[in-house]
Length: 138
Image 1 (cartoon, helix red, strand yellow):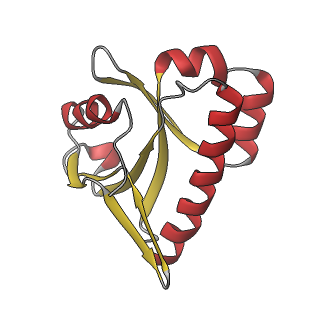
Image 2 (cartoon, rainbow, N blue to C red; image 1 turned 90 degrees about the vertical axis):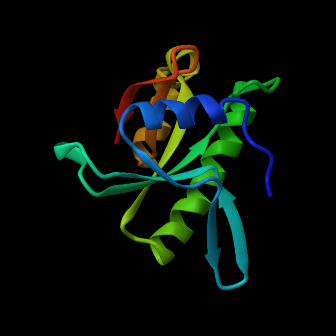
C-alpha cells in the first residue's frame, strides 16, 4: 500500500462533507501486469447536477523543495492513471486534488495553467483547514 498524502484525510473529509460516498481508500487500478493505487474513489449519489458521477482522486500536497518538480511528478502520475482508468473503468473521471493555497500561488501561473488546460487535467481545489471543496475545474 502506498503512503497517504499529507492532505489525504482533509480531502476525504471535504468530499464526504460535499455529499460524496467514498468507494475505495485507496483505489486500486489494475491493467494487465500494472497494479497501481490512486488515493480515493468516490461516487455522488445525491446531488442532481452530479448524480451517479464517479471519480478517482489523486491527492498532491506540493510541499517538496521544488513546486515544479512536484508538478512534473503529479502530471506524469495523472497521465498514467488517466490512461489506465480509461482502459479499465471509463465511467470514472480522474481529478487531481490540491490545496487552495497551492492553486493560487502556483497553478494560476500562466505557463502552469496552460499545461493544465492543454493536458486536460481535472482539478479539485480544497481548503485544507476547513476541509471544504473550493472549486472543481474540468
